[in-house]
Length: 451
Image 1: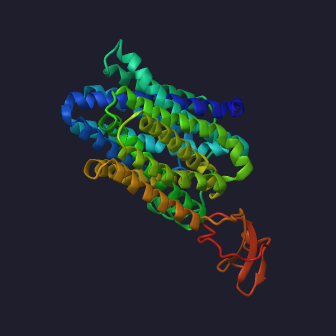
Image 2: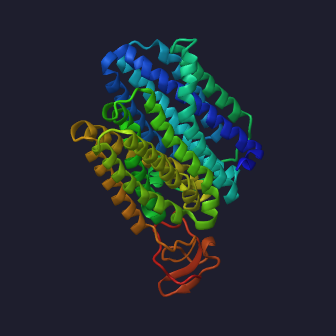
Image 3: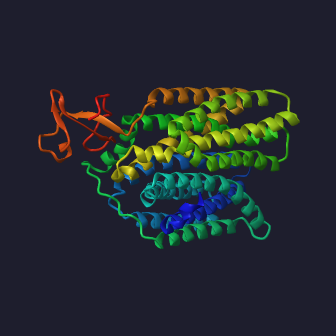
């Protein structure tokens, strides 16, 4: 898997992503402490609102940037966003009011919503070979999971010698290092997009691409399944560990660590599995595992707290991590297969926005249900959502899903360059090629004979 790091451009981009993730992890810890200093016992409400603001920024900003990505050099976008994030991080230690936290978090996450899809859309052009790209996707998944384990440990170590304000300095250093790494490489030029209309029309294209492409619509349904299972992990772990099992705060990290370990192990195994089985055959079974695991979580949280139920919780969290990784990691392959090179920024921006819309739904649901109806009911409801979403994905995503599709053009004139290999039929011009939605193909074709 590490062989892809021989590519200098990818190596620098991956390292930039890792150091930025570590910086973000330090900011998460520091922000929690800052919120507690300002709001006291209301810190959880402050952090909950900040998390909602983060999702709103992700949902709203990413599609707009994807619409203008072909006009701005990608390196300039990523460097500018890193510098903006570093500036916000250096400002956070000086806030004294809750509203100031909200404003700065919106700015920070808006910059992240611009940086991440731009980098994600660049990687498949840097690594055009599918095997290399699959390995890169797995490495990215591992980086996210290891960051969730490493950053809290690093923050804890730093807090033994410095105050939490200095963690924001570490965050800024991470973003500046990321910017320097991006500057050090030459990135592929964004290909011109042959679409008319203003920014709004171009921003809407990424979303329309999802609705018009069956496998992408199925991917969105699978994102909802993952968000349903992941929400109970990220929102309710502290309640389950301390409220149900009556264990110390350190055991919260242990439970979250089990989730991370499961995700990392799955990511390591995925390149070989995907070569043998393909995306659909890996992603759907993993998604079907999620409601089954959540049914087990309902049983664990309904039973009396004890050693075996605690072990069961750790196993369930590891299994959720593995299943979520098996669904999420191949998503980049599905997107790359479903969009023209010039439209990759819009496609990845839409994925970033739409997938976070799922989390925007399940995060508060997991919290409200746990507080009002109890943990077993929460697990059952979220499991039901995961099952319904997976059933929808199965129905939407054709079992036989070839890239080459025969189709008919009704509105192109004879002699159009795109019709060079087409033949005339009573219905129009019939031909076939690797099919994606673009300015010449507005709708997914009905099955016709392969040309």
